[in-house]
Length: 128
Image 1 (cartoon, rainbow, N blue to C red):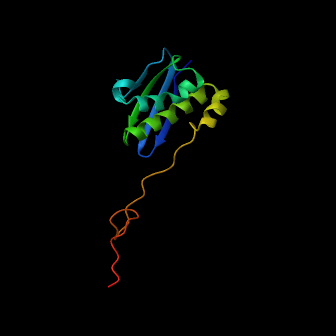
Image 2: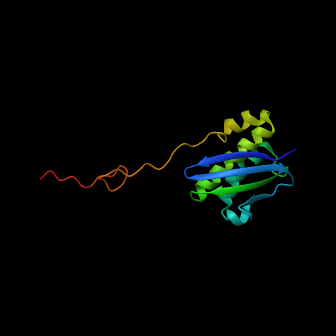
Image 3: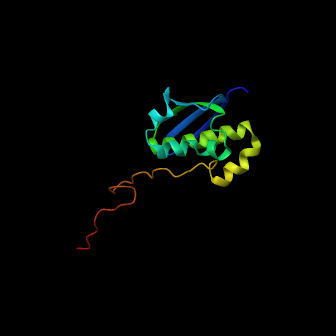
């Protein structure tokens, strides 16, 4: 099997994933998964598509992860891994799609508007 490439995005985070046959190591920006994401919850989020298909020990994953915060990065990585797994085996698409792992979460930060303190918040109104 050759190297499979996929991209996942969430908020301002972009994850570029390279999946190859291996023994289950996940390397993010030249660091191990447990070092890059010390939180077990975020480690779980990243591994969700692998655990759903039961292939966590089958592939080596190298990741280039930029932008955003740790939550956005973890979710971008989950999407990228799910997309790569579909490229490897198209029959897995239904299982991953039913869990929502192939859906790009399009919610972004709304811009600040002029004459307001934040995007929607307004200054206190005074009638007189």
